[in-house]
Length: 85
Image: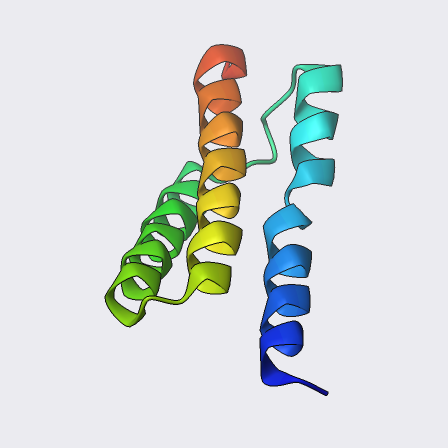
């Protein structure tokens, strides 16, 4: 298998992995089971991957992780809106 294709498939799968969680949160308007710390760490790590992608000039790393950052920032915004504490 071509290593670029492998990277693209891995990037797509990891990027879309949080979409079902985001959809569930938006539908139920409930974030009780979401860890704020986990979200913050994940967004930080994904942002570093984007930076790494720019340093290495690797478009698949940049695009897939930037998409994942946006999905998780959306989840973080939902967390702030729907958090009842």
